[in-house]
Length: 406
Image 1 (cartoon, rainbow, N blue to C red):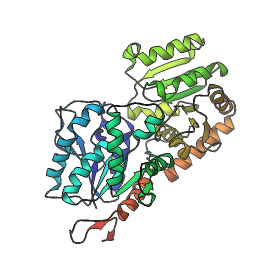
Image 2 (cartoon, rainbow, N blue to C red):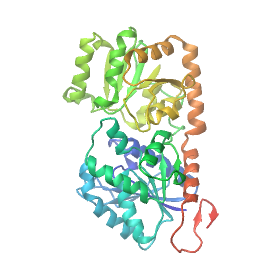
Image 3 (cartoon, helix red, strand yellow):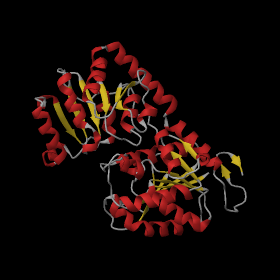
Image 4 (cartoon, rainbow, N blue to C red):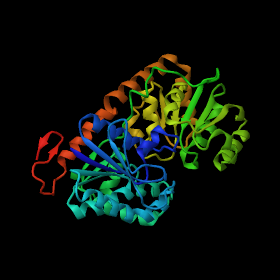
């Protein structure tokens, strides 16, 4: 099958460089690689953000990346990328006019807008994955770029796609509330590279203290303050925060300053460690160095970090929100806690830290669950099942879709 992945804002090749890597890049790279392993011809279309990037690159994993000139060749905020979506769509039409794919699969709402504009002109079926929805962010008081335009266009993209893929049950219900028919939504989660994130391998350097580790962007909504407020109830443990700028520039970050001030007021400054940015390739060793990985935001659309920790055999304490309700099985692979409840977090983490047998059993169960349900090969198979259900509207003779003649 010939598959066009559209990822306007996130290039999957960032995983093999020093570029900033987000969950969408991980998702697109992992899914594209798995589909390529299954014999499909996968091309990812992304906006050029580096003037030195060649127009077309074949990734080592077997898929192709096409860099489209739409706006300045530099990193832009998503709000600034939006202004170039029309140009991006026109470039897709030019790429597909003579050699159209069997299906397009767009990731994030702006990619969906561009893909649908191009695909409609050529009669190509469209699949849409949002990863996060504006209505969910608004419900949790997260205001991003182009918030009002996004809410309107997101609803349009959701209704017009031939099929929509939700990454978790929470997102499924939001899509239904947007007016999308349940009969044309499938739930297919994000995956994890279970060959890279494993229980075996090196550990990042650590102290002798029990280590609680978290990973994420340094934003107030990500709940790092909840765990700092929980630290007085865990007097022996250190809390390591991975993310944000590089270590040498942490002092300039306003969220670091806010969290350090909070730690000072609670007299736990000596046990809060800011590790700064860590490359994707070094993340497995960092996760394996932890006794517990926490993810305690007020809201999280999917939650890739708990899944990566589970694949590394590390127990997880996570907020019972978004996709983490699906991935983390309470008292089996970790603990689910109420958001913004420091005492509840402290109790859950302390129980795991004090019981080595429980810690090991939760970790092993997490590894088993990650391999059985969230490997990229499994996610690719489920995604192919979606492609099979998408109506082929073009008259192109016999089109092979996931080894079925249509």
